[in-house]
Image 1 (cartoon, rainbow, N blue to C red):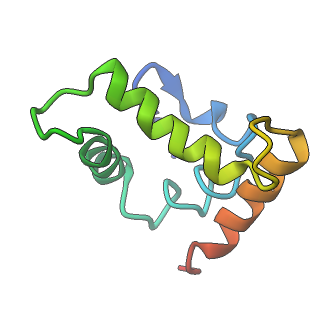
Image 2 (tube, rainbow, N blue to C red):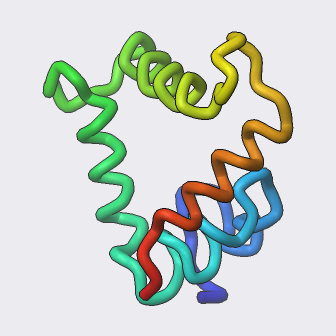
Length: 99
């Protein structure tokens, strides 16, 4: 995995951020033995391109991220706490079937 790249970010950057090594890092949806970053990017693109024109507008981008924000906002107060984000990420990792 040492030479793997995702755009301008190197593999060693994954797992250091808020997502940790689960969902996007080693052993997660983007890790070894997974469906691969190319397919994942195509799936995300298709989900965000709501009008199917082959591009993602600012409105489509913001709408997708608003859905993620609302899913993370457990108490629906319009604000995210670190605990809400961590809980969401932990539950997301648990929902990914083992490989």
